[in-house]
Length: 121
Image (cartoon, rainbow, N blue to C red; front, side):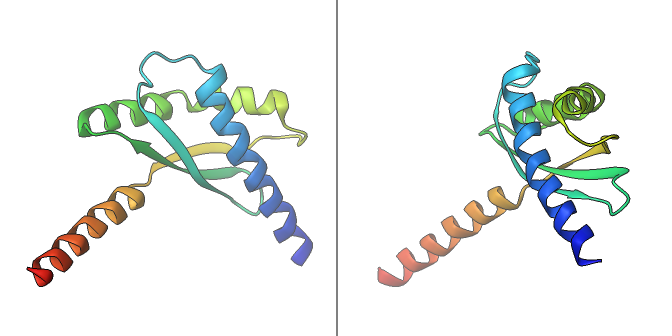
């Protein structure tokens, strides 16, 4: 049982790196205009599905959403490219999830700095 967990963890790490490479280097989608990061990949135990957590760095919420939607719309192409480089028999179906935790963290840090600045005044 532990071995399956290790295998899944290794696959998650490999998928994370490969998906980033595919999106940024091989996909060439003109709708992906903003900088992205693949934060993590969670693959199901049976390897049939994988949740891909994507963070989009943008000052514009509209551009952020447009970039994420372009990635989401290209899920089948990304899976196809992943299958070409992957050493497993079947590549999981990819489900992209917009992760805004980094933006939330940045917002909270700014608020804390503002509060700290007000206390010093």
